[in-house]
Image 1 (tube, one colour):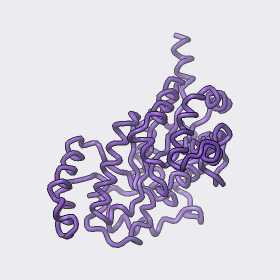
Image 2 (cartoon, rainbow, N blue to C red):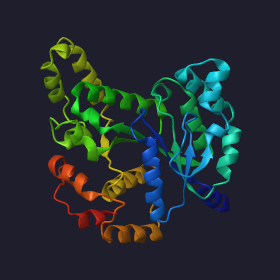
Image 3 (cartoon, rainbow, N blue to C red):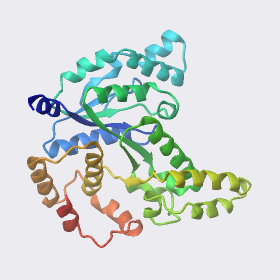
Length: 313
């Protein structure tokens, strides 16, 4: 009985934050660290990207102390992509270094800020093996895959994003949450062809195919695009959670989704802090108006008020 209690108490929870370059991973880590700290959760960020410089958040563990991309490129005469692949293989071969660093923060919640090279999550096994080793060390992780929301404005790019997300989900083999980041900026790229729900829930993609068929360039690839859409829909795995890091409600939705995925449960103190935060007056740290404007135009609320949503927490 005591051994079971000891095993349960040694569990550590966290997120591995992945996604293409420019999708907002580092910004997400900083915002989520600040947000969860306000809730009373002890959070540390682990930089897993050997190319990251000038980190905007307090970094508890920095993989660049073990291997830096610039040193690899200079020493082995590799380009950025080859250097990054080598760096992650080097991390995989030196997991004891990472284990010792993580042990110093045993009672914390972990955010792993990962590299952006897509091949690391779709073809190469080093990052996958690192995640698997973390699981053996009693880490309960969820993969948070960020995608820039501006891809919703281009049907061809959106289908590509769906394929990348699906491939990443199947390869990484972790509980997986896809995030449409920078949702408050989505209108800067033009009005969407459909409601935002269409993109977050990945509804009938034949409507997107009709838009592609109207483009002379894509018209001749209609059959190929049709088959790609069928692959996505047959797996029926990909959906997205919209995110604006400046919006408390958006951050709560993402955190609640991640906590369900990795098994973390709210404590009493965190619940009280969450209720107090949402009942406080809107301050300069969070900007509701722009995000709510997008939601009113693009998101179906289902008839629930904010108070009803909070009662679900």
